[in-house]
Length: 347
Image (cartoon, rainbow, N blue to C red; front, side):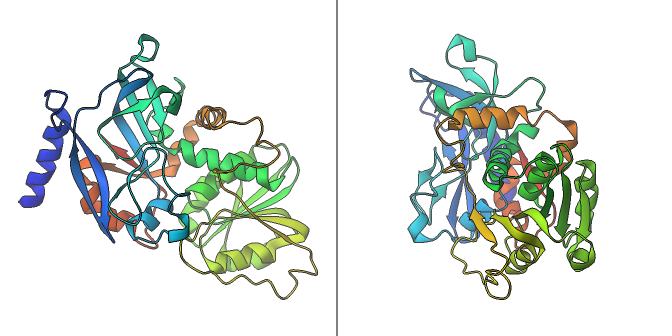
């Protein structure tokens, strides 16, 4: 009964009119290892150069937010890992998140009524500077726009890889990021793209993107070795080993997994040096050198949103959950080995 009353309180806080100082909104806070709660938030104000956005959807990052939820962010990365509109400090308590999509309710006339994407934590209504807002294209549903930050990461990964038309490309790890990389890579003319994963239920999504799928056990005999480019996104040492084993002579292996404070064994013996493999990191804090001087964050996120205008990408959102249910459901959604792909939070 107490949990039910909490949920009803969160709904009322988000919906009831009140004075600007009243707690008419709610935000998700990570309060300790495996513990989260909704906290009331005062009505935000549209200062000059800013807007007030009522959230429609937000995206839950199963990778980064799992590490935040478990308190697994290394102390050395506390500042670099800060989300743009984060409150609190790592490890706890912290208001974290970076995939909010909402409707502009207050602000300059030209912004009113627009659906926008913002790197903001999970919160029912919030204010943000205009420079942090990107208009969601009319042909991209607000729910799908929650994976824009992941699409931006996938785009940067492709830049880091140097992959091109006709290449033999392997993606090890068919989670959300791996499948977004697959979607982009399979769109290049003549590219031969294969996804390798332990979860065969992801085969249909990979195939709908124009790629092949093989299970981990079949990878060594599937004729997909000698790859020109390999992306690794499984967040496991075994997956990294598979990725290195499938790379061809002088090929590039792009590491997309972020392990937090976990140390990972990498098989840098055997033929790693004789095959002159290149293991490359990729992240969106600092984009590929070939694009760095021209591709600002606003340009990248606008392009990522534009690239979401394909209905087949809805298959990547496997879970939908109400905002008020987040504290109760997070332990299941962010558990190691949890099934599914992306989670959309409904407001």
